[in-house]
Image (cartoon, rainbow, N blue to C red; front, side, top):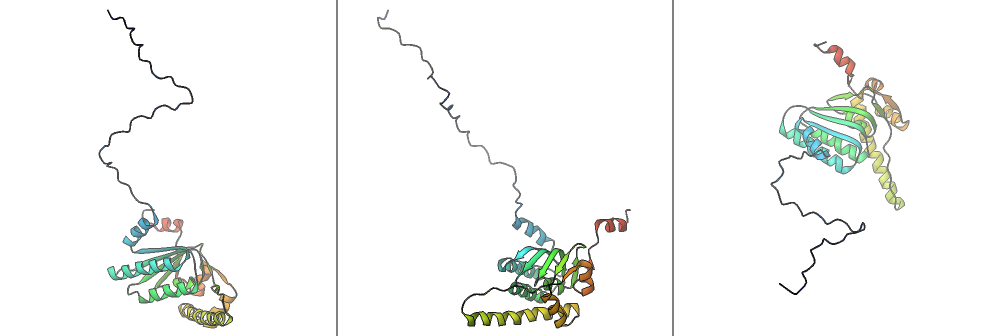
Length: 225
């Protein structure tokens, strides 16, 4: 028999409410997940629309947005002979960007159908007016107004910029007048007056060809009704 005292039984360390519980061991690596993640960003949506030959522009269009739209339109023009649909929703843009998009539409070999929703303001109206087929939602509003220009610096530079702006604005007004079958002076006067047109008034003005039917009209004309 040993004369040495036996060791005390092992006791777990005492814990207090201020001590956090020990972390559980990290899980072992498992096989890769079989779930598929579907992207829902703007790029994904734009690609889906391109598959249907649709390009959508929304809000204030800057040069980068216009360049992407121009590239998309050029791609669709080269990839088939069916019409391309350009949708404008609450679009506003400056004079230079509008003229860039006008040049893009002029280079299109396939028909371009433009649909306007919400408000269309200033120089952006020309993008609608020059299309092969022009449609507006029944609640669309078109604001005829001169696009703004801002330039600071030496007086000579400001004067040169203002003269260039007037020249390019006249080019835009000529395109609008041609599309509406009105005089350039009449279109310019309406832009200076900030004339606002409803969709029905825009059709009478010559800016659009047709109003999109509402759901009740489509339902009444459906053969299943």
